Image (tube, rainbow, N blue to C red):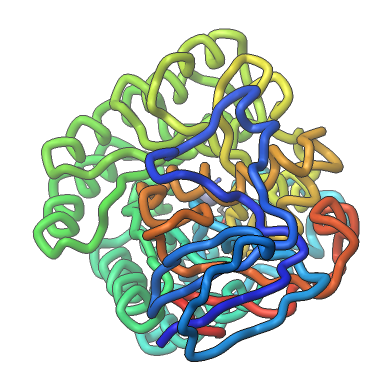
Length: 411
Ligand SMILES: N=CN[C@@H](CCC(=O)O)C(=O)O
Ligand SMILES: [Zn+2]
């Protein structure tokens, strides 16, 4: 099956193979072709060019894209899409003045979601999560990472990871799996955090590895959750099983988690709302991708990741949703891109680079996803007729997407 899109107003993020991420000033450039065509064979980008050089192609289907922009699908490298129930009552509590921390200290927060997940049958967790995954695919997401971390017992963590695996098997987009057993300390271990770390490291982690249920390891390195020492211990143990770190750091406090991640060659360090000078220095010259989650900042009214300082330091940056029931009940990457421009002062070019190619890098997918490149998967968004690509972040809250293609097929 082959498909030819013609008269594309602008084809964005056009790259040669081998560009796996962009950093610093490189992010200001968003290579594109105006008045372009794109040729898809089966699930792969076969070729592209400008209309003045359209070769004779034998396409099964031709789609005219006059007035429309085509860009790679969003690569959302940080989500907690697998969960059960919601936390809208905590939302109301926060409106009435309680902080995220106060709610967590009262047994709400992550522990609230863990209780619900433990009590919900696996099929039901799958159905609820699949619905969310379908929703974000329609919003343009074509690759996603999903974490466990609302189980907090061996049984419930494995249940979450099986659901993630099943989503990967049943949907055309790649779904990367991360083990986040160290997301919060369950109340039974309130006075024995070492005991919980022993359970995670000695019991659950080996099972996760044996069953090949995760590729990555995560921990919430934060005051009141897990220390830098615990982070180092977990990441070292996970390394023995070949699980690379993608970790939650610097959301509320900078306690040294960025260095712990970099020391363990983390694929990404995520959140970074609070950054200290040494965190920038530690990241320079490494392969670790900083990841910002602006819709979490919006929802919790916490600072936004200092994107300008990160980019001006020559570092790369990826954008992701953090879709979860507590701090970000939204998986809309279009909103993330808008917020990055409006609140973090990223240019549209920088934000689109961060939400496509760099997002793919933060899931080790950038050799197959994240750009319009010959040989990559045919995962792309066709917009409605819009004046320019800047209109995408500018018209925040407007759905500018007409169709989404995953592996060459409209979803
Ligand atoms: N910060 C840690 N974990 C999630 C929120 C978890 C929750 O509140 O349920 C996050 O990335 O924001
Ligand atoms: Zn998160």
